[in-house]
Image (cartoon, rainbow, N blue to C red; front, side, top):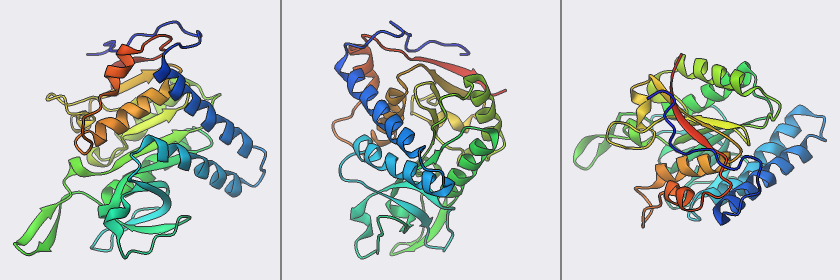
Length: 277
């Protein structure tokens, strides 16, 4: 399957006429502008916090309105906790009576839909840190027993783990170097704990192919291939991953690729499967 082209690159550099791409590229520009504005701050911690907060409004638009956004840590019933997560998307319906701080929260695992790591650079160390932080989130989930009215139950199977997304604002980073470092980072991580999506905005993204039954992202279990998306329309790739993850929860089902194929004028994105080196 190496080099399989799923969506072809078209009209590179041309202004898109597609309404879908116009909307998504506007989101890319908004995020880039907020990150650029934060670059005026010299203090590294403050700058990082500003860039994390810049992702909040984008996350609220990308996920259904019933979800909320915060940052902090995630805890399961056994007391196991994740590392600090830059952005946490969670369901407020699940946390009734649970104290939630919009700046920094300790959330119950059952409420979490996704987490996002935000980095101002994309060095090997930054990629490894993002991978480790997101893996700590996924480790809070997984198969574990819980006491219930019907006896011991097994809950939170691997496929139910929240999305782990890594966002790197580093426009001068070499795509070849980024792809190599992501591949090495995921290879060093337990298969079930690997993040779902690495994004270099406006350049490309790395995620997982579907499994043999067509279930999105489940190809990580085979652990031998990644899905590589290259081009300016990386926001489309992000929307695809999020909508694929939420597909079984949202009615009617949304297939973003249907929109991409139907409104492809100006599309700048290629998708291919590549073996992990």
